[in-house]
Amino acid sequence: MLKLELRTKKSPEYVGRKLKSFFGQGGLGLELKEETPACLTFEGGGGYVSVSLCEEGGETRVDLVTQEWDYQVKEFSSRLG
Image 1: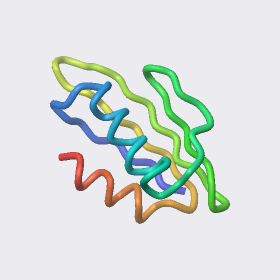
Image 2: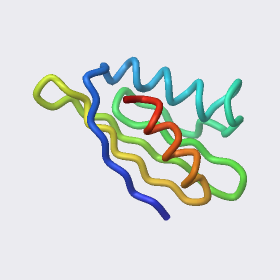
Image 3: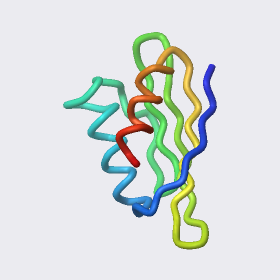
Image 4: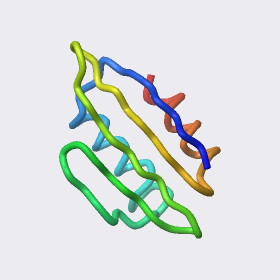
């Protein structure tokens, strides 16, 4: 299991779109099991990726928790910048 927190100047809406295109259909193909404005959960391949988004002081805090998708979560985080 991997827990990762990052901050970005990009909006939660932008980050949500990027998460869906990276982990969901057209990307890694994980199934989007839950979606709210502040939370997305993807499942597949024997694991999951759970993400919470929170606006704080002009930034978006992105908290990622994953099982079985550690490498891909790190790759997504490095691309989000």
